[in-house]
Image 1 (spheres, rainbow, N blue to C red):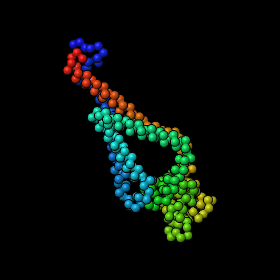
Image 2 (spheres, rainbow, N blue to C red):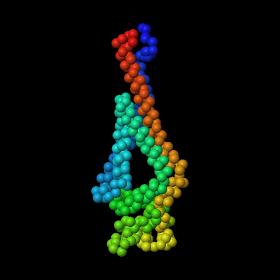
Image 3 (tube, rainbow, N blue to C red):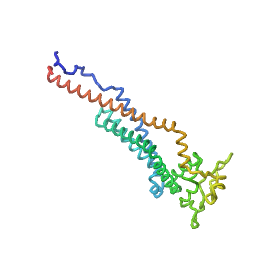
Image 4 (tube, helix red, strand yellow):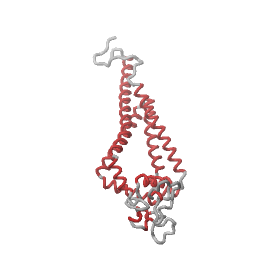
Length: 283
């Protein structure tokens, strides 16, 4: 049958521009992160429920459980759009998924650039977070374990120095402080003892009352901020690899979703053409 010049080439009724490979690759890609997001939310909620309410409200800004829940919920919603959008070939959901993923990627990129350009302000923000964590050290078990891990990992104590622990009400050095830990520091500040079978949790007793030279024989006296900055400078390639590892899945998700959207649009055009062709064979 003759065809009007310039009209699209005729395809069989069973032909589809939508590639099953792209479609299901995007679906399983999102399904993987969807499951991960549900695990993150479950772990965050469980950790949150295990805490005392007053302790939880005291340090929301630095609570790892809240961070897990927020990131998990956002990832759940984002990957849900990707899963259903790819499976149902829904352009609206796929465009939402692609747009949100692009925004997340650009925000991460902007945060990295701003952190590098405004390193002094970033350092001040880190110092503020660490000081806030010190204040709530005894209020939150997860936070306490995180601080202890950091101080042992980086061989440091406090934010700027070991005397920062006086900001905590239990370790405060004031004369009217009735705490048994008055003028002390956490055990994670103590220098490791070779072949120690049992951890001495009271090794930091009264350390804030000593000067740097005397205290340095028992505990780490340098603050964690400088140690953290030095560690970052020494591991730029490692951090770059981690950043690349986070960026690649996002870019793959954006690319696959856009490819699938274009294929769906071409398929819609083909269906419209076939309908018009059946209604008007000379179209």
